[in-house]
Every structure is written in structure tokens, then in C-alpha cells.
Length: 284
Image 1 (cartoon, helix red, strand yellow):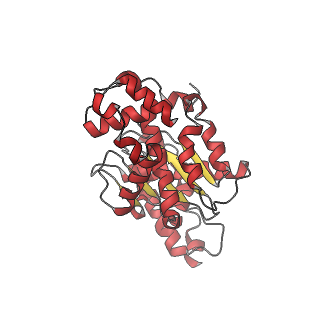
Image 2 (cartoon, helix red, strand yellow):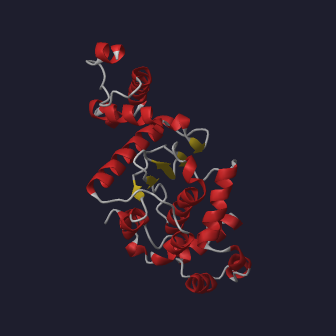
Image 3 (tube, helix red, strand yellow):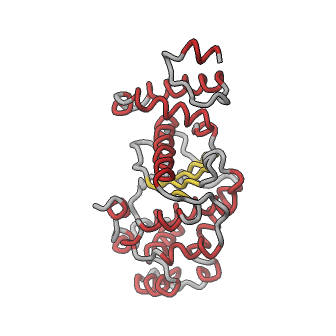
């Protein structure tokens, strides 16, 4: 522990004697560098954020070590700050609530989620529902230029954390992102010791991302149902609404999928823009 004893005035020492002092000090230096590059509002609170960010990087939370679906100009600095805030909030949630450890997610729970919470006014209830299954679900405001939709990772405590940035306030984006992150939980739970980070504007180029995309799409709208969806051929709002009602999902999920497949984001705006998820989740 020579390094820690020598430098304890300069950086926050970890509480556990099992911590590797050299690796912890490297994490501290990286955290310092991140805060030095961060926007002013984060530099102003650097003293308070430094221990948290150091611990986060030491425990493998660094964006550089993550499985990352990102654009070339995404900011690792901002994403590290966002991730450390997510981890802190998740820790508070677990400490304040009796959250069981994660034991797996049944297919019926996964597929049933958008149907159980079809009414947008009930979205805030998803956190409590997923917590029953050992999953901490939270939303943390996106930072400007961060270019991230969501993240999923496991904690040493045995819990899974899913966080959405809500950089887009559309209901269809909310549901696809959440189902995508949950798809990683269903398919890749043993790979979540490092965060999986998502910019869903970027085309999937890895197997696990393509798998999660497919399961998320099928979880919302089964393939056999989508093949025969009348709205694919008519672009009729009435067909979108009736198809969504038959499946028991929000009409925005159908309209959003049609937009993406046709690359026509000018279509169905009256449906897509009906709800603002940020306002609903934040109680605005």
C-alpha cells in the first residue's frame, strides 16, 4: 500500500484493502483527465465527482472498455460522466429499496412489458416492476453532444442496471431502446460485467447488437404479424391504430417502425409526436 500511503493527500483512497493500489491510482489519473476535459459545470464540482468517477473506472465502468455501438464523433468524456452518474443513482436506488438480485428474465415478462405499460401515463411504473426482477431501470438526462441512447451493465451486487438517456422524447424510441437493452439482459446477461453502450442511430455491426435489434423488434411486433400488417401497404393511420390495438401495443411503435423501414420521417408525425416521454417520466 505504499502508493496509497504516499499519495493519500492527493486522491481518495479506496475503502477496501483488497483494492489494487496501482490500478486504482491509474483510474484516479484517468478520472482527473476526464474531469479536466469536461464542460465547466462538471469541472466546478470536480472535487465531489472525482471519488465517484475514480471508483467507477476502477470497477470496469470506463467507456473505453465497454462494448460500444457509437458514432465516430461521440464523446467518451461525456459518456464516462453520464455512466458514473447512472451507477451512483443505481446504488442509491438499491440501498433505498429491497431489490432482489437478478435471476433471469422470463420471455413472458419481456414480451408482456410494452403491453402491460401500453398507456404512456403509466411509464413511471416500469421502474418498480423491473425492480421485482432484479433490474434497476432509470433515466438520466443526455448530455449535449454525448450521442448515446442507453446502456446496460451488471453490478457486483448481482443486479442489472438499464439506463436511458431520453435524447429523443418519442414514445417509439423509448420502447425500442428499452426493449433493446432488455434484449441484452435476456441474451447476454453473462457479458454485462462491462457496460454495453448504444447509439441506435448507428447501424449494428456486431453479432450481439444484431441479436438485440432482432429480439427488440420481434418483442414489440412478432415477425409473422409484421409480414401481414396492412399499414405496410397502405400507410393508413387507421390501419396503424387498428393493428396496434390488436397487438396491444402503442400505435407509436408501429408508426415508428414504418418510418424507419421506409426512411420517411415525415410520415405519421401526428402519431409519433403525440407524447413527450421526457415530460411523462419527469412528471412535467
